[in-house]
Image 1 (cartoon, rainbow, N blue to C red):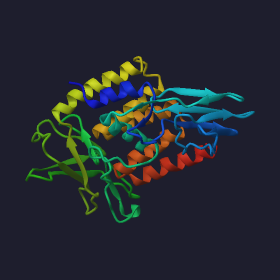
Image 2: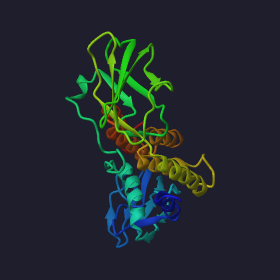
Image 3: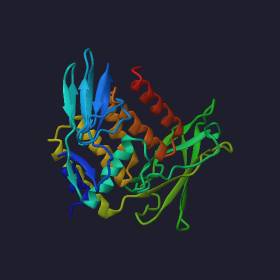
Image 4: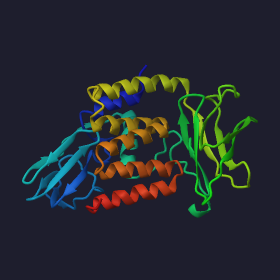
Length: 316
């Protein structure tokens, strides 16, 4: 049986304007050059900026020597050149199930933390400067298989070479350690005790020769039933996008889908692909910053936010 997310994507592709009466916006200005005018359905003018949520009835007009790209949540893009205008259109739905994923995408676009899956459970520590070693992935995330690849960063002036990964359960007495030499990533061994989908795990990385240890990161395995619905939903995204993975729509929808499942690594990959395709898309950088915050990667979140700010100000 397909999940509610699959149904949502079919409806989203038609252009939703509101879910359960909420004005979360249906589109955004992904690239602005020159003077752009935005007015609502009543004729009231709004300040044109990438942080503006575009609602049904909003009219966007490109002035002389100007251009703007309007991106719908569905991934549909409308490019306006000087003298052209476009009115935002959408269809309402009262489906409460659709509301959850719609909110997830809106949250990514506008930098709002998600409450779905493990997202939003950002790690805490006493300041960025004290984080000499960081457990990067998986962090506040779910993983698809039972042999995840652990990734970490060593911020010290003289990074280490040998590390010890400690993995333990939050609900049982499970604990496993492995020593890694000459690398900052390692897959969970096939010969190690099997990880279970009904467990909640935490892990940290330490310098094998010293006392430096990372803050704890958390993860869990994607439940078998969720794997089945995920496969269906991925197929539906491909169908909505006409199997065209050169379309930004593919990566916008995929990022929201993976994030809702709690698969933050896959969501990150989709967002980075979107940025590679459309480097000037301000909200794509905001989406990346949101994801980094949710997974405890504050320095990278700041860098992504700074890039979004520069782009919104017309700087490279």
